[in-house]
Image 1 (cartoon, helix red, strand yellow):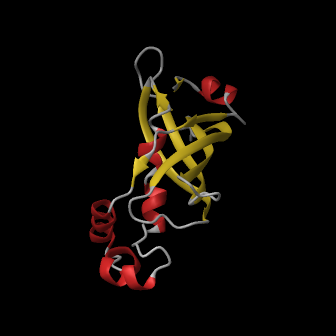
Image 2: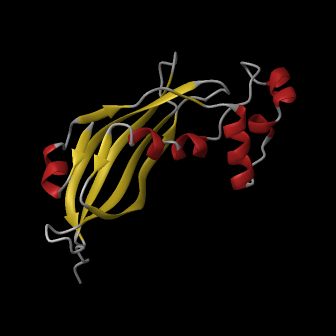
Length: 163
């Protein structure tokens, strides 16, 4: 587990792989809940009978964006932040989906810190995260994620964005 308490802690990890999560199963309940939350009911995700007949493995597959959305939960297994006032998802620079995640698959995340810099009174962190599927050569997803982390000052006061 890597603990980041400051900009300097993150900067020291630049270019390094910072962790590998445990395996997590993507089941049909998870896929169905994601479909419900997003309104994406494409049959390849939710119609198990049709998937059994028409998809290569005979199984439904997870939404690409479901795979992407697993990143925060998976990466919190190997990196934590202390002295944090707040964190903001700043988006992604690049996301690619390379292989399917069939229902029942086990996935895990592997992350490398690409860049740590100071921006607007916060740590601006760019990380490459690979979501791997057990037994597959290619990752399901590779994403360059961006986050803004605002640390409390040593006196307990929150940092404020620069003008």
